[in-house]
Image 1 (cartoon, rainbow, N blue to C red):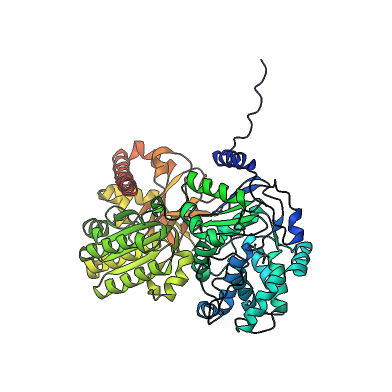
Image 2: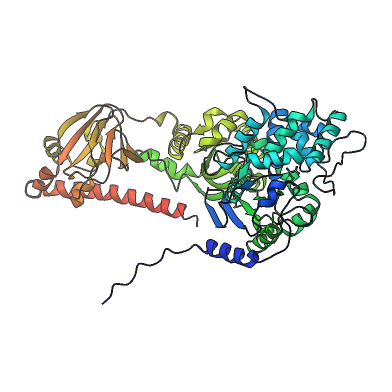
Length: 615
Ligand code: GLN
């Protein structure tokens, strides 16, 4: 029989869709390649590429997605961002408006009286914005602009010198605009150098893929999703996207936002960069332009893309994930610290006063508000809330401020709000005034701290963790008679371990059980590269570990490490087996005790599984 041929690599349904979209519009013959900049007229009118870049840095591309062309006006949106970073919002608004003009991109239109350009997306506003970019640390305007745009694209972009020269030699209209701006004091110096910088920024060479990545950078709070570099200051993102929404497609902007519904910017090179905030960036490229100077195929492709994939920003389907992922209390889920019976019982009774809320997704006002409401409602029955942010993707300042405010108002009522797994958000939480002592690296340490405080409250002076427990009072010996006790005493040798020493190694044969007389140990699952993995249990004096080996004889499943100087008594499996003949009652007693411990820990795990299922 013939072996079957290797299966062709499966094409993603998104690639299949993009290929069909490309086919649908590739034959469209409308529009004219720009020729007022002579060099642009050399473009091939058939070039057509479509790209989507996701927020996690994946790029889908079809057609001429790697064909270089010049950014032209698309640069205006980002250079406006750079000028905002340099000068601040108020200073920029004084010079350049944010009103759609209804005029063509190259109109010599300035507001009557002030002479301020209507917006930064038409040439007048863009030239003024370019003039606001500062020369800094020995770098010229255009060098800074080039570096900035390169960071947005995630690769070194160059200038198409032929296109630049071609525009510089013919751009008399833009020169006229420059001198008008100088006349009205919108720019503070002779426009000559600013205009050259502007012509060069327009001639920066990109591909349609670069546009998608730049769009995704805007969608991702200014962080380039591929290089992870903060390319654009997050403060300016809403400003940039606003002017793109209202003015980015010139006098087609109203219809564009109505039909396509994505902040976007086009250029006479044939490119369009569109952004679905918080989600993705789109780059489309095809040189023939329609009457408004926008890529004719680009408009069609984006319209379909938005409709087919439901990308319109005002789509109601974009409701964010609810922030509350899971909630449970300390009766259901305990810290990894094993506790003596009295403490276990106290937590069983009172653990409802410690509540854990696991949050997820993007924290914004509308997702955090229900969490704040819920916590406030429950605060009367609670002493502690723990917000676990492990599954949180992002949080804006408004939502973090709500958390900090909640923490403050709860504290005034004697209730503590702890936060764990806040990682990247910790600095901002602190800046917004969060109590530093309430920020914990992980949920286990936070939960343990809550338990300790709760137990201190409930048990008062009886809440002590014994440093040392006499052999006869250890858990394992519970219920044994005096004779059995002394037989066992004789059979178990004493061993000592230093802080950090490994008492048990995962994978080794399990040949003994340990009773902890003093000190404490942690149990950790083996990590990937021989390093210790996650902590699953902490044992203190009086407790038993390693007992599973006596039941099933299987190799050790985890490491046990001394957290401080430790002394133990050790019962070798051989000695235990020898009890069969000499001390059968002792062996049964020990097995009963071990079974009780194992079933208690299984019950605890069951309660956790139930809590984590969220019911
Ligand atoms: N460099 C071009 C100009 O100023 C940019 C215009 C555009 O892309 N709409 O004319």
